[in-house]
Each structure stands twice: as structure tokens, then as C-alpha cells.
Length: 536
RNA sequence: GCCCUCGUAGCUCAGUAGGAUAGAGCGACCGCCUCCUAAGCGGUAGGCCACAGGUUCGAUUCCUGUCGAGGGCGCCA
Image (cartoon, rainbow, N blue to C red; front, side):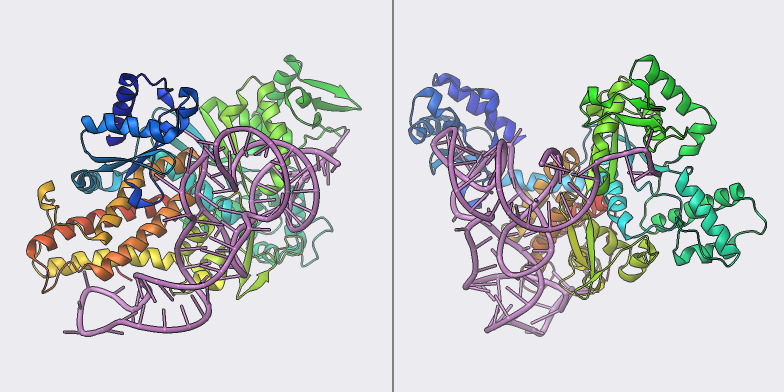
């Protein structure tokens, strides 16, 4: 890697000059302004004070030393601004990037950072009491995308859905189904949604309440599974909360906590000493009426996951953030490393339709089903829109915009770029140009600013993937894909691949660029789970 | 009252392990099709990066506080 060569060279020169610098502090960054060079080091600025020198003067000294023996691949070193050292890289290295993409194709930018590690990503985990609604969509798209990212950097990823298939809400759901079956209104604390009536019609006659609950749970699961499959989301495990009651797992966890002295009795209830591990207050595990709280099975569940994984990721909605401290505390109480549990919180999404807010209210039953969003804007747009922004930010988007086949819709903009690249390839084939990977010296005709922009985009894809995976931030891939699409459209506009004024040599070289671009863009879209159409 | 996330262009949002002149899309205005998809490309206008302090050679980025938005603070799930 060129960055390593430069760093080593910097270290060597600093040493020779007798400058006492913390050489592990040497970092290279890409200057925001391209005219400053390809890479930039702030080492002179960082060390100037310690060395008792002026940064600019120090930088000049270092540069003079570097120039005496330029590192391989570096064509120019200059001092700029307050004391930055800027490096310019030979064009040859740019063409190597193209060859790297063409060689690796759909694995370009992948790595083995997570090799040998099992990560469990739990997301959606909606109650099996109804269809998935708009509120579940962000977590669904996000969880799946980080799964893709982590797989791409080498982790063994397990996607998991936790079903709260027991407890008060299931009883309420069962009674609601029963009431609707008998053409009655659902109970006060029940589920009023219209879907309950429709589902009840499908339900067999004369079931006991217990059977109704089991039937409803299964029906809801199938319904949710079907909706998720429309988005291309599939889980390795649908984990049943109820199963942990049936097999005694919850009982064992409670016994385990008691053994470790982490649980105690008070006021007729059993409490978890979560304060010991940083929670605000101790939490109830078993209520005075003998029922478990929501926390108890969930603790057992997380222990179960820890037994099978090195790293747990939970994707939770903003309304569950207060729950993080107690879950981490519970895991510590059981002897696990709470840092191995990462909870990613997604902020709320406000939906608009033609500028008007679309209200969500589960209590009223007038939910917006996720299914209907997918029908309205399509699976690709659904995924893309929900992944557009950091999950740390509240999000607002307009369904009408997302569905529009217009230039203000970023999904179409990006997909169109891919389709155009495919179109060029088809056109080349029709005109008798067979694509073949060219040797580096034949790529030297690629000098147009648009071409260099594309190569630059491909160059930063691996580090973008790396960063996105490390930060569990798929929106960074979205940003890359949008910027890269912009470069592609510019190239398409300014650089004809096939035509009267284009030499055969240039056509072949540009074809290399086109194929590499198509492959790179496809890598990005695949990570997002958005399709890359060949034509539109 | 305490905790979490956020506050960047008219709108929707990127950017920040501290770096040089803060970006994109949309909207507004002005250009560009005899040629691979005009579902496109280019240009102009538009910013006290919420506010006030602090740390630093350097702060939109880190720290503290204030204001504002949303979400949590149950023997609900």
C-alpha cells in the first residue's frame, strides 16, 4: 500500500533528521481539496511544539529530506498551509485500482477483519400480534444492511428475530381474535386494528383461547416473514420466548443470578441488583403476582445468544433506549463482558405523503402497514430511503417522492447509473468490441477528469466499506453510492465510449473503466440490498 | 429533575477518531440533446455549522453550560 510506503518513509526521514516525533502518530489523510495532492500528513504540525520548532519550517526540512530520495510511487512532495506535507502519487497507481476491481469483481473491498468471529444481529423482533408496520421498517432495513456489511468484512453473521410469543400482550391478542371471530368488539386492552377481524375470518372454529393464541402467533409470524421477504430480509433464527419457559431456561438463569448473589427478594418480588453495574435502579425480575417482567426472559435470551456468539448486536427503537443499561447490567451480573453487547438505537421516522404527515397510531389500529409502503414505493426504494440517513438522526421522508420516477428520487438516480453502464457494455458488444482486461500501460489513455473521478471513487470504496462496517453505519455506503453515481453520470455525459471520434484504444480502455465501475457500484448496492438493474 | 439522540443552505440531509476555501440532492435562477437512457450534465444565488464559554498551533468536530426538537425514566411490553 502506498500509504504504508509514505508512512515508513516519513518515519525514516524523521529519524535521520533527529526529530523526536511520536511515529505511531503519523496519519495520512486525503486533502479535502484535490489540488493539495493525493495524500497529506500533519506530522509537522503535531510535533512542532514538542520539538520547539515552527511547524512550517519543520515541514520544509522534512520535505527537503524526502525529496532527496522520493518514496516509490510518489511524484511530488510539497509544504502547504500552516505546515502540511502533501504527496502526489503517480498515475500508474490509479490504473492499478481499476485492475484490482476487475480482478476481484463482486468481492472488491471485502476483507477479513472479522474472520473467525461470530456476530449475532438481532433486529425487528416485533410482537407476533399483527403485521409489521412503518415503525418496524427502519430497524429491518438497518439490521439487514449491517449484517451485509459485517459479512463483507469477514464476520460470520447470524440474523435473528426474537418473538415475544407469550405474556400479557399475547393473551390480549388472543382475546381480540376470539371477540372478532364472534363479531364482537375487542376487549378494552385488546387490539383494535382492522386486520384482527380479517385474520379472525381465517381462523378455525371452536378453538380454546390457548389454541387461538398459538394460531394467531403463527399467523402473525408468517405474515411478518412474508413482508420481510419482499424486502429480501431473511432470518437464520426466529427465537421463541415461550420456548425458554418450556425448556426451563428462564428458571435456570434466575437460579444462576441468585447463586451469584445478584438477585434478592423484596416486597414480595424478586429484584436484580442492576445498580451494581451502573443501572439507575434495581429492576424487578419476578413481580409480586409471580409473573416475570419483560426483562427476565430477555436476560435468559441474551445469555442464550452469548453462548452461541462472540458479539451481540441489538437493533432497538429509540423508545427502548432506557432498557440498555439494565440489560448490560444483567449481562455483567451473569459474568459476560457488556462491551460484547452493542445496542444500536434507531431514531424515529416521520412519513410524509405529498408534504402531509402520515400519522401512526397503533392504539387506534390505524397503522400503516410496512407491506403497503412496499407496495406504494417498491422494495428498492423502501430499503434505500430507510438507509439514506444515520440512524442517530430522526428521519423524515416523503412517500410520494420515494415512489416518483424522477430525478429528485435518489434511488432512481443511482440505479440509473448502473443501467447506463450496462447499456454502454451492450452497445460495445453490438459494435464488435469484446471486453478484455488491459495491461496497465494501455490504460494510460484514461486521463479525463471524469475518468479520474471514477477511479478515485473506486479507490475509496474499500475504506468506505471498512468504516461503514466498523461504525455500523450503512448510510456511509449510501453516500458513496450516490457520489459515485454522480461521477458515472458525468462520465457518461462527457466521455463517449463508442463513437466516431473515439479511437479503438480509447474505447477499449474506457470499457475497462465502465466494467470496473459497474462492478464497484454493484458492490455498493448489494451491501444495501438494493437491486442493480441492467436497464430501466 | 435525570438519561439518550439530534440541532449544518429555503427544504431533506452528508461531513467531524481536531486540520487547509464546510458539501450533496431538492427548490430558485441561467445554460446544454445530429452521438452509448435529458430518469442526465454544467453554472449562479443561498451558511455567525443553534447559542455562550473552555481546551488547542488549529474547533462544525472534543469538554462544560444554555436554548430548542424527539424519545426514555413502571412490579407495561
